[in-house]
Each structure stands twice: as C-alpha cells, then as structure tokens.
Length: 453
Image (cartoon, rainbow, N blue to C red; front, side, top):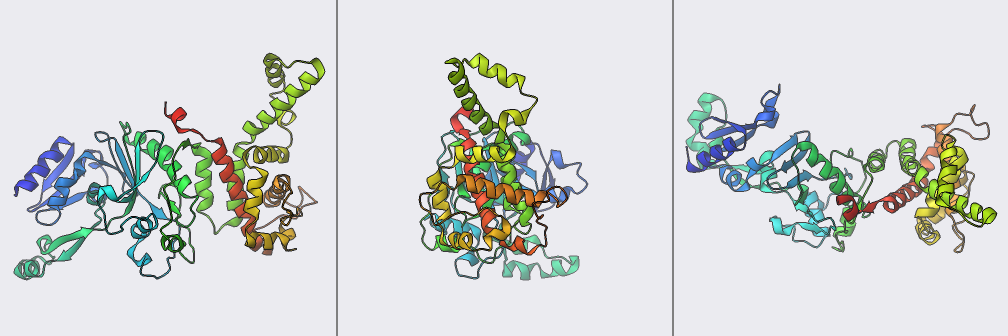
C-alpha cells in the first residue's frame, strides 16, 4: 500500500469513516450509513494511481454528505456547506457554448474564465450577513464525494493487465486514470456554524434560498437547488442570450426571506405544465402576507378615525379595539380582494407596475379582446398616467376565483378548468401574479443583519 493510501486511511479513521482495503482500492463509508440497506450508494472509492492524490489534497474526509439524492456536502470543522445547482431550463439549444455545460455558461455569463476551475475563480455573492457565498465549479471534495471525476483508459496499463482482466471477467481499475474533474456548478457557503446536518440544511434554506431568489431576477439563468424544484422544460436556454454579452453582475444578498412563501415560489416555478396550479401557487404567496399588510392598513385607518372623533388616538385604544374584534378577521381586515389590493399597494409602486406592463408583448395582449376571455377586468396599458394596481388586484382576484370556485358557487363566474381553451391565454397573467409575488416577497423580507443576530 502506498503512503498516500495509508494517509487517507489514517485521516478517514480519525473522521469516523469506515475503510476497507480492497487491494489498491479503498472502500470508504461514513458510519452513519453503515446500517443502510443499500450503503453502496454512499460509498466512496479511492484507487491508488487513479484518484488517490486528488482525494488526499481535497480533504474530503472533513465533509459529510446530506443524502445522495440531494447532492450536497457540509463540514462542521470548516464551517462550510456546498450543494449542486441545476438549471430549470431543460432543453438547451445546440451551440458551441451550451455544449460545454451549465458551469461553463454561467461562468462565461459573469465574465469569468470558464476554463479556470480553481477556488479563486468562483463568483462571489456580496453578503451583509458575514458568510462567504460563492457560485462556481465544484470543489475537489465535492467531486470525490459524488464521483464527478473524468476517467480515461491507460492503454499500456490495459494491455499489461489483459490476462488478469480476461481471467477475472472485469476491467481492472489500474487501467484507468483521472484526466480531469467534471466541475458541476455548486453554491458554496463558508463561515457559518453548523453542528448537524439539520443546521446545514437550514443554512442552505436561509442563505442559499435567498441567493437563488436574487439570481432568479435574472431569468436567463434559471438556477435552482435540486431540493427546491423539479426541472422545467423550455424550448431554448436563454442563458445563451446573456452569456453572449457577459454583462451579468452578482446580486447582493442583504435580505432574509421568509422560507414558507419562498417554498411556494419555487414550487410555482417548477410546474409550468400546470398553469392553473402555478397561478394559485403565486397567489398563495400574496395571500400569505395579507394579514401583515391589511393590519397595517387597518391600524392606520382606525388611528385616523379615533383622532377624528376624539382628537387623539392612544395606542392602548387601538390595541383594545383590535383585541375585541380579533375573532372576526373580516371585520378588521375587510374582504379578501381588499386585502390583496392592500398588499399590492404597500409593496409595488404605480410606476413599477406601469413599467412592468410596458413590455410590448404584454401591451399587445392586454389590448387584445382575448384578454377579457380570462377576466372581465381590463388593464388600460396604453394609459401612462393611470394607477393600474387596483385593476391588477381585481383581475388577479377574479382569475383566482374562476380557478377555485365552481359554477354552482358563483353563478356570475364561469369556472376555469384545466382543459378550457382560455387556459392557453394565461401566460401573461401568470407573469403578472409572479411579478406581484416577487415584489411582495422582497418587500416583506427582513434585513439580513437583523435576522442573523
């Protein structure tokens, strides 16, 4: 056994890994997976002369895997967690750039040298919370844990071992050599305290989720953690458009997003093949924040009314009235459509919505009479001075009711069913409710420094 293999065995033993010496090959598995019925999926194989040198310098033994179905590693000692990123764009156009893979496309898009796969080449995401957050080619430790190494056959070794191979009926590992690493794209967070796998997951859900939400404002990339969404099929890979310009800049992570509505967001992003459910998922994000914004609106109105009647509005009086009415939410917050309008008005300015609706394709749709097949509420997109927020709220609410209510419940509304022809017209209204959901999510997030304390 080589000195390299002995050193790997010694380190793994100290790190609570079980190691089997299989003659020029080590089979390594962490003790937590020893009792698994199929522990082979968690095994790491290190071969002398093949990947042993990479394994030794990678420090892979300092990391634990979360689950092989979710490609991520974490280290308590190093205070680091790293997980694979994928694109929601499944069908990639056949070009010289996209043939090189997602990592190449993303690195090129951010003005990095795609051929540089060292740790210093990673894209740094500015963060006010302290941790170092980067996106880029995976680390060697990740490559060892998830076997993303690229192998090639050594012809001379193959010929020398031909007799052994023929007798055993297998190809000996010694006939292969590592020629490189298939550098999967990963998100890496360093400088955080983690004592368990659950802690590592929380870090990914809090910081990683926020990074991806900020990056999702560049829809051409469509990056996602496998834990958050399924693959969404697209006819083209819009990353080609931005990558050709190399004009992207990493967003700054300075907000802590509420995880529950953010999960709804990723769920909605993952189901384009189910437009009605996708619309409702985005609507549920808005609905999640109704109490917060309706309460703000109600308190302001109540305080103004008390001043009008009594000349003063004491906080104890405002609190007492709210406590007395707490069993009747509608009496406090109003109808659901009013709550929707309050949330939109608090989080989106008239100018911002005007700008969103100014997209030429959207303008054409909302000018078209077909837009009224979806909702009777017309958006006057040609008016540059109108405040569209009220109409947008009424349109979104009416579509929501058509999806969730039957004819018998609301005789004045025709239900919108999965195979109705109008469903094909939902694209722009899904984009509208998605835009509103993103704005409310962003407006409702806390400063990262406050949530990190």
